[in-house]
Length: 286
Picture 1 (tube, rainbow, N blue to C red):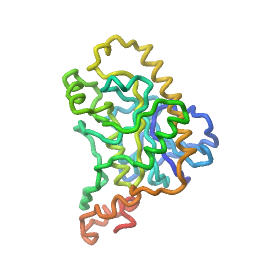
Picture 2 (picture 1 turned 90 degrees about the vertical axis):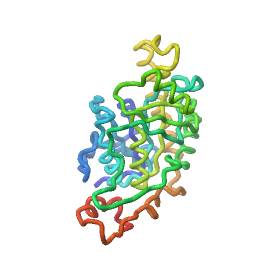
Picture 3 (picture 1 turned 180 degrees about the horizontal axis):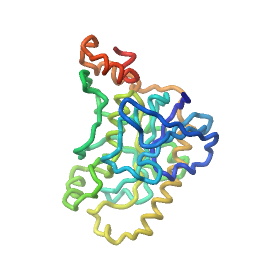
Picture 4 (picture 1 turned 120 degrees about the vertical axis):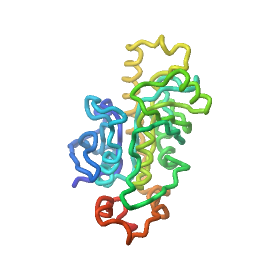
């Protein structure tokens, strides 16, 4: 099977990233079903990169319908050790303007209908998640924003809501009262599962507009939103390219050993079928 070092999750705009060459597709099956789409493998800045369209090409999958486990497991099958996730968000603070990139270091979970762990079926594991993104990777991305000339802001709280509907004003103002920075629908489950899979993970939250709390929210036109989305996609391509170029060859963080003390189940008691299903995740421990 083809292998990759770095995974990228994002939208269709990233297919046009300059510097990609030798692209080819790989369709994978996982113990958790099919990922959102084929993984597109490229060589970027001399590194092997795998890209996945989160909502499938053509944007066909709702946030609540995403098979997060299959998506992350597919990257694990490809040998990916680091994931850069790119997504559009709404701003919950006046200071985060459209076209700003926020690199959050915390999440608040407001989802209700999602599976967000590889474990169960006879095996119990509790990972540490106090610091939900890789600190080494956030530093790389922040530096890449500077190189790309993008206003990248390190740190902040990402509210992950269920969707597909956007917030009510009451909800939006509650999140603001909690001190949250941005709101989106996809990234928390990716972060949880990447940590369980011992893959480094970082989110690039691209601000598209202000959430509905803002007094001028309803005055924003479709044309304005499309213009911001297009520019954000262009900037994301530049930031991802610069991130890959600056990525250290080896990891110095703790993400690669996140499961070391997390598995509570006696290995002898784990059902054989569960061991087989999770062998890529648990293989070095049980």
